[in-house]
Length: 231
Length: 216
Image (cartoon, rainbow over all chains, first blue to last red; front, side, top):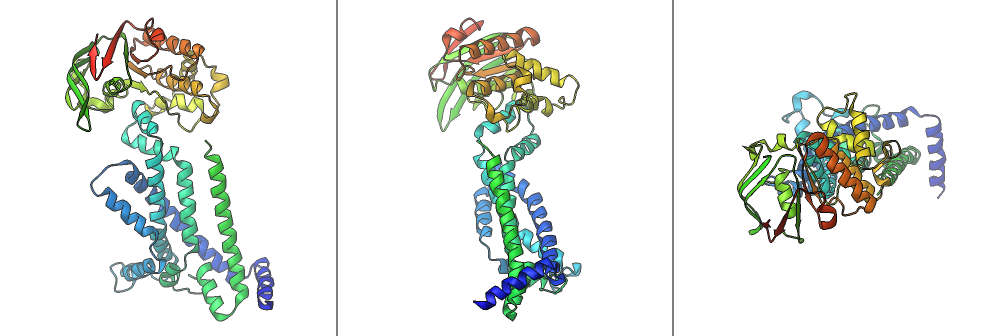
């Protein structure tokens, strides 16, 4: 048990002294997760709206695909993005492999199905009266899209929070596509994996604490949004 | 003549729910529609509001076929459903929303129009304007929804059971609002209601629907 307490104490010291290596991992996580969640929401919200609102051939199949992608293993997504971005891959010329944008791309693929399916469900379950009201007040299709997204804004925020939770806690994509390069692409989760493997529990615990704080913050936000969504 | 329906038939899941060989509705008229549940009243309102197109026949609006112009016409014709939906906004924003869709919300007179519409349904704009959607009773929500249609100064106002959740005072306010729309903007009204006592003095003409067919 001693090593756990020692690890905890050292972790507090690392956090309080703003240890550069720990801060670098936190920063890399903030950059990749922010880029990924922005891209997931910007792409996923309209796609989710279309999936929930429009009726088109193959809609059920697209829905099934999105549901399947929800449980896609992160290492498989990492592998997929790796093959695309590696030198021999179709996007190899971009030179993105082992960079933070590459990790963000993989994490976007991870977060996108979460946003799409949750927004689609929110739009599908939105009161049928909303659709009729918008049309009878004279809304065009574009205006109906914006209004429906606004009316389901609390659900959209919940979708973003859920997607962020998945993005920030993943390790497979960051490890394979980012390469876990110290000071560059080492994120909180890849650092925890590495430090634990080396028996350096203090850094692992310190980063784990940061990750738990992030998860706590996201859950707090979700709870607050649920309250605000009201009756 | 504002509406003309010719050989209109509407079919849901293979079953004919409305069959109107011919119907004319005069401009500025107040037409009442009565009938049992499932007699086709709401279906007729959905056709008149261009939310649906008939399976057969044609609806003419101001002597022109309505189907190709449905989107544009929905800006002139508005429907208040039996269970109105209020947007998750304040009362003021709800009433102003239709003006916003038309790009008229930023005009200086918009706030005055919203206040006037609320007064038309017997609601004080100062007290009710800032209230959120969830702080209203069923009857108040119904009146706000009616105000949101009146503010548009529509050519046609279609009301589906507008008094369903209103008390006596609310019913009177709704009737006053509907009559004021006709008097001020020459709005044509088509009103569906089970409340014959409320409907009779309001309407110029009342039609009965039974099993999808009109009876004068």
